[in-house]
Amino acid sequence: MNPLSGLYGSVAGLRNALFDRGVLSSRRLTQPVISVGNLTAGGAGKTPFVIALGQLLKSRGIPFDVLSRGYGRKTRRVLVVEVEGKAADFGDEPLLIARRLGVPVVVGESRYAAGLVAERKFDSQLHILDDGFQHRALVRDFDIVLMTEHDFADTLLPLGRLREPLLSLARADAIVLPAGLQIDHRAFSQKPIWRVERKLVVADAPSAPIVFCGIARPEQFFLQVRGVGIEPVAEIEFRDHHAYDGNDVERLLAMSRKLGASGFLTTEKDSINLESSSLQSELRPLAVAMLSVVLDHPADMVDTILTTIAERRARS
Image (cartoon, rainbow, N blue to C red; front, top):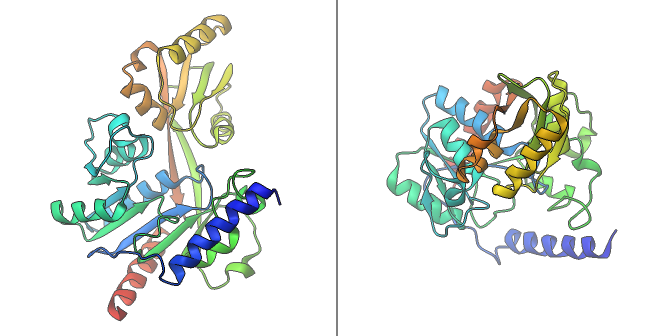
């Protein structure tokens, strides 16, 4: 193991041990918390899963809110996301969740403080904690961890992308895997294994676009684009949560002129970041790809979550 990765793993292990032993404390909100997280630094599809889970809760008439750090925002303190706001104020993913679900989304460095605001302002019966697996300062009632096909062979930061070793999956209540991915289930024999399939939907895509994105796993997006029959003339990567500026747009336009592209294609998250910079109108035509997940046996998933929460709350 790389010495830096070994040091990172030691620090992460010590932190978890301190939480496990009660040296570092976790605080509990009045209403139950469902955490959706992963082991890696992005790219597992947490945001589409949060949206899919939220849609299932809405279909059952269960009022809920979403708590998020608001990564990439330039503001501080606890804020309730405004759907007409900007990514710089709330973060691109919280803004996307708020727009897609139409429920309260509250951002804050302390998700406990964000939850207190949510409980004071709204009548939620549940909180969904976005990207919460490592945020152990907040007690959760059900822990969902999303894994990709890359994670099982990955290494710890900074050499790899893992924020915690695979052994940390012992804390999870359910593990979400891509449909068709085969793993050794013996390590997780006592845990539900849920399956999801990612779907990319692109309306009115240009025939030969420049495809660009600023997400954690850009190569995965490019493969999905080709998988729906779109052949890009170029594929451009930006840093995850990239805040676009005029130089970026001019670079894309210059490349379009040089290659004779028929337009542009990007992700929903990137569209929000472009919108925040008021530069989106300069890239025309611009198609936005929407990523969603199809859950296997979704009713059973929700039943498992709600039953487990009820049983744990009854014992506490």
